[in-house]
Length: 165
Image (cartoon, one colour):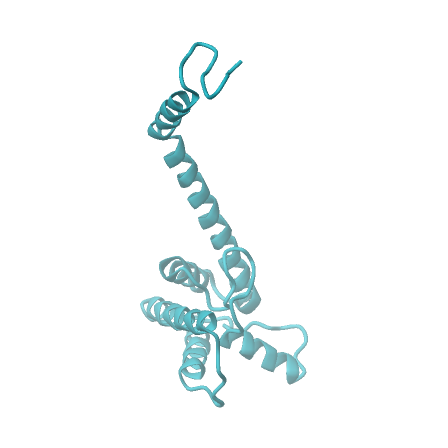
């Protein structure tokens, strides 16, 4: 039992808790937990990058998928604007291409990247051009502007990897 901040043995409680907290932080437990959380976040992001690829490149060759995954990991973004938590940051240009196919009557094949490396290069060049040359100016929040910058970085990295195949 403690009275007026003095523990049962006569030691102030604050000194005990301060020493205990100091030992816990120095033991490496905090660093370990941060490393585990970071690895879990990277795993979720990789899953989202793969899901994003499946939305536009289901029929693409494995080397195109590998280039997509490498570019997504390098830039920490993917061509569909899907974040590691599964939420969309904005409507990406590849999503626009997909929606345009849907509006033109295509209901089953949303394979934007096609089935060759060359078709993936053409689709990515179109997405990058459309991103850099919008038809209509639309005011955007800072978050969307930043997401669009990351999208452009992804397309450039993806193109570079595709052109080196």
